Structure formats: C-alpha cells, structure tokens
Amino acid sequence: MRRSLLLLTAATTALVLTALLVPLTLLTRTHAADRTTAEATARAQWVAHAIGPALATADERETAEQTVESVNTQALPTTSLVLADGTVIGGKHSERGDHSKPSKPHITDAIRLARTGRAFTYEPSTGGRQVLVPVQGAADGTAVVQVSLSDRQLYAGTMTSWLVLAGIGVGLVLIGLLLADRLGARLVGATRRLARTADRLSAGDLTARATPEGPPELRLVAGELNRLATRIDELLTAERENAADLAHRLRTPVAALRLDAETLRDSEEAQRIAADVAALERSVDDVIRKARRPLRDAPHADLGAVARERAAFWQPLAEDQGRTTEISTHDHDHEGTHPVPVPEDELGAALDALIGNVLDHTPQGTAFRVTVRTTPAGKAELVVADEGPGLPPTYAAERGTSGGGSTGLGLDIARRTAEDAGGAFEITTDANTGTRSSGTRVTLTFPSAPADPSAPPTPAETRSSRPAPTD
Image (tube, rainbow, N blue to C red; front, side, top):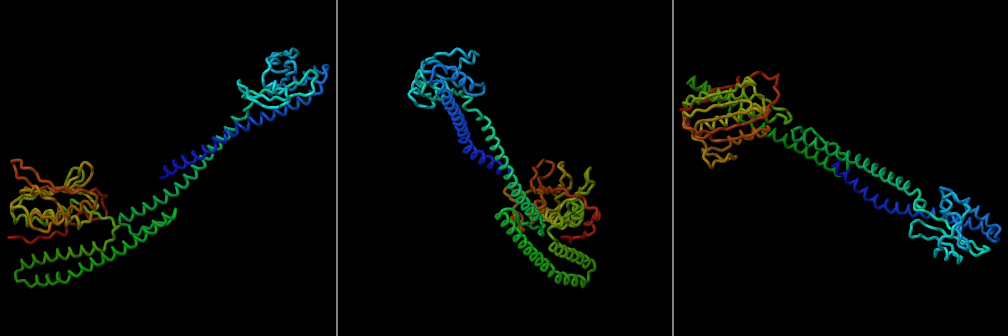
C-alpha cells in the first residue's frame, strides 16, 4: 500500500505540474520576447530622438552616424539607420570594422511603410524580430531607425527560467512524495500493528488488544477487533468452565464404580476393574485440566514416549487376540525422542483411536506395527500400519463415516490432532505383494517442537494400565 500510495502521488503531482508548467514555460518565452522587444523599441526611439536634429541639416550627418555607431555593441541588438536615399548606417557592414562606408541594400516593404511615419515591429521570414521607428525632419526625407533582434537575443534568459521552473517542479514532486511516504508509513504501520494483534489472537493469546490509531476507518476496525477479542475470551472461558463442570460430574459415577469393584469377591477381577476405574479417573482429570488450560499455553509432548506408552497399554489385548505387534520409536538422529507441539493427552487419544481401529476392524491375528521416525524435512512422523484386508475403494475418511459400524470419529480425531498442530493426515491401503496381505497405513505428520528440559524423560510411561482382555 505504501508503494502504491507513492506511485499515485507521483503520477498525480506530475500530471498537475505538467498542466501548470507547460503553459508557464510558454508564457516565460513570450514574456522574454516582449521584454526584449520593449527594450529594443525604447532604444530605437531614443536613437531617433537623438539624431533627429542632426539629420535636419546635411552638415550634421556625421554626428548622426557617430550616434548610431555608439549604441552598437556586441551584447546589444544591432541598430542601423536607413537614410532617405537608402544608405544604411551601422548594421552588418560594421562587423567588418569598416564604420566609414555606408551600404545601400535593397529597400524592403517594411522600410517603405516606416517612411510613411509609422513605428512598428515585425518578424521577417529569416527569423528574429525588427523594430522600425521613423525619424521625421531629415533634410533629404524621412529616415528610419532599425533595431534587429536575433532569435538568441529575443529569447535570452528563457532557458534559465525553464531550468528554474523545472527545479520547482522537481522540488514539488519530492515534497509530495515525502508527504505521501510519511502518510503511507503511518497507514502501513497502523495496519501492520493491527495485523500483528490479529495474529496473536489467532495464536490463542486472547489478552492481545489493538491500539486505535491511524485514520478513522482503522481506528474503527481496531475497536471492533478488541470487542471481538473480549467476546471470544468470554465465550471460551464460559465453554471451558462448562466442560470442566460436565467432566467433574463424572466423578460421582466413577466413585460408585470403584466402590462396586471393591465389593467383588474375586480379587483378580476386582483388581482388574479397579485398574480400569483408575484409568477412567485419570481420563476425567485430564479432561478437566485440558478444559481449564489457557489457549496460549504452548503444548509439548514426546511423540515417541506417548507411542511406547499407548502401545504398551494395548499390548495385553493384542496378545489375547493373537496379534503380532511391533513398536519402533528410535532413529539415528533422535534416539527415541520426538518432541511435537501437541498436548500429551491429545496424542494419546489419537493413538488410542488408531490402534483401537486396528483391534476392532481387522480379523483377530492380524499383525500391526507402530513406527515413530523423523522425516528428511525434520518433522516427526507417526505410522500405524496393519496387514488386514484394507479399506474399501469407496471409503472416504470423513467425520461420522465408518466402514465397521462405529461412530466414525476415531480417524477424524487423529486427523484433527495432526492438522491443528500444523501437520498432515494421510490414510492409504497397501497393495497385495504376494508375501503378505494388503493393509491400511495411517500416517500422522507433526512439526517438531523444541525439547522441554523441565519435563520428565518419559512421563507417559508411568501411567500405563492393563485393558480388560476380551474372550
């Protein structure tokens, strides 16, 4: 916008100055010619007045010739005297240094007209301008004083005036550009600060507020953006509190389940159910903590640690179904540590959804593997692959769509977990190679996050618990 404003100002100023300066340059040229002509006319009238008495008698002719020659200098227009007999005193013949030999050139129509007693100015076809003033009272007839102006003498000083006007025009353009640049800097600065505030709000910093500045329109936008941020903060706060309240209500039935588990006569069954209830309590606590967590808190988790923990969680059930499992979270660069900008509970929920899909929708005995590695681009990649029959050709991974009669939310949870962190979600079906069956491969890609030195090495591994085996 700043550059566009500068270009617009430069173009507008140039057009206005062109419309003003072009006529002004023509006017200065005309003014210079008129001024020079007026000076030449005054000189011719003075010469005519000075030599008029001298031409009244033939004896004073030499005095008249001296008067004419005295006004002819190199810097001034050429002044000549045309006598009644056609003799020319002064003029071009004096440039040869011979001031004593008058010439008798051809008598022009302009001189004949001047001899009638009229003083006038005309422009000959050869260029320049001539001033003719008659001298009345000469003994031999009417003489004519002729002042000849060349084009250079006629328009002397015009170039200097044009240069001054050009300098004024350039100065006005520069001043206009300077003012436009200051105005553009003000507008652009206010707009960029407004955009930075919007970026902070989009990143979750709901304390960000815009300072109303700049033109009235930008101040209005800043005020409305602040009102929007305040309203969003209020709505999110109310939503988090409602979610926390709803999750807190689950504590009562969970406590009842724990009491029921303690009354069971079979100690092993009681311990198993108690472990499940404890896992459910932790999930409820995680929901409450997540609901109350400010959005601007930067999430952080180790993808490798979460993958190992959730794979260990599902391992007993996989063994009961006769499945071969494989977990790989080490590569030559990271040695099992893959920090990603995702909350640990969300990573766990995504892994639970992917592994649960394998256990629920593939035949028992189907092997699967969980792989965490670093891509060449430096991103963390999670792959859950199985050797089952694969997805149908018409399957579309959309929210609420399921190929196995479930809710269809599992894959959508995994997809949103990756995409909300700035990553990617991909699901493919491997072709049958003859050595193994075709299978489904789900890949989640996450951007890498800085390692958190304050976090425990593997916090997720301390919370693993055994799921209830199926018959």
